Length: 152
Picture 1 (cartoon, rainbow, N blue to C red):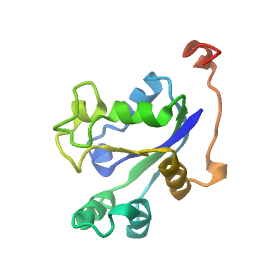
Picture 2: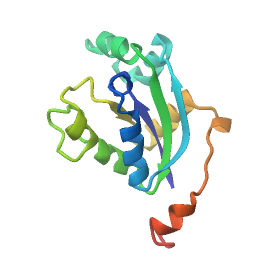
Picture 3: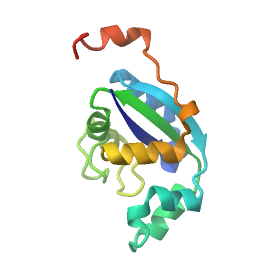
């Protein structure tokens, strides 16, 4: 099993799409093992987006991510990082394919509703930014036996 961090960004909450996003992950058979709403502070934004802090677009990114609460989620599943990123679609909603979250709900590069870790190292780092070990409730839902074969 693999874990990834998903952030439902301020535009997702402001547009009241939170339930639809969570449903898509659950409908796919992914397991939500941690979830909380929080305000991203400028300090947390700098730690989360450390690779972008010196780029010209960073001030706008920080202003956006700190403008309203986010919902942070740890998702667990087979190939969760790849699966979630494919579900999101291209970063720009204008380029995302219909059927993806961004393709169906976004028409912006920045206001693209959802963030997901882009690889295993990022997932570990990002999960640790938003959750302590005791906030993660790994479990096997009863429906799991009906989502994949026992040897997968």
